[in-house]
Amino acid sequence: MQARTIIAAVAVALLSFACAGESASNFFRTTPNFYPTAQQNYEYGLRELKRSNWLTAEQYFKHVRTTFGFSRWATLSELGIADAEFGRDRQTEAIDAYKSFIKAHPGNERVQDGYAAFRIGLAYYKQIPSDFFVMPPSHEKDQGPVIDAMRELSAFADQYGDSPYAAEARKLIGLCVKKLTDHELYVATFYLDNNHPYSAIGRLEGVIKDFPASQREPEIMLLLGKTYLKMEKPAEARATFSKLAAQHPEDFRADKARLYIQFIDKRYGGKI
Image (cartoon, rainbow, N blue to C red):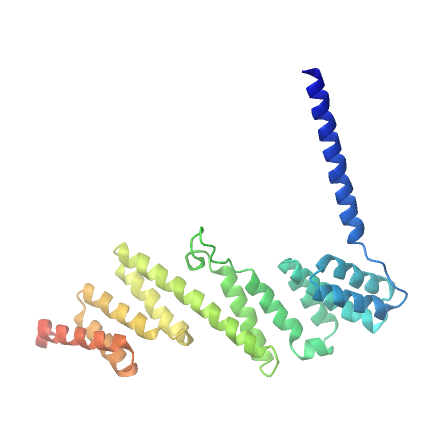
């Protein structure tokens, strides 16, 4: 029994030693060999960025910034550090670094072409919860991160409309609009299921007003008309269905709207 205890202790000690050795080895592997000039170190930092070796890249950039602080490479290294933080999914740190770069170097070409501002919006977008299959859908969660991302991306698009990153920003804005619209419809459906139609109407009308770019208007108007009908408000229901049929005649929901109009006219006649 004692022998087994000794053997187990030795095994644990060897394992701990191996882990410690591996950690030390990893540490030295991620500590780069620095070079004599600022440009060399900066270019090696870029190479490591392209290889997704974020920590090593950041070490090169920090070395340039501290050792060659008055060179143009030090300025570029500030942006490289922000990119490395972004790559490491340290989005809060990346946002701060990009904002500092914009403030300190407003005339830099990567500020002028919108790159730094776009990356701020993209970093906010990266913080939006994903739709992991075992978790509730993201549209059922707090939409604060989506609102933050849409605010920053919209500000970028307004200021840098001709930027080479503007098209990607508009695409992300569209995805944000979709997420916010899905959330509002989720909440409206919750209210309807729990017999709070007035609250549902407020949400549905809000989507039409606030997110015209969502291209969900026919779906929302059909649900809105059905809600009015359920509340015994045939005039409001008919007006909504008529608007749907007139504004979106090619949508399949327009046919449903026309059927509802026929039903309302037959049931309520001249009462509305």
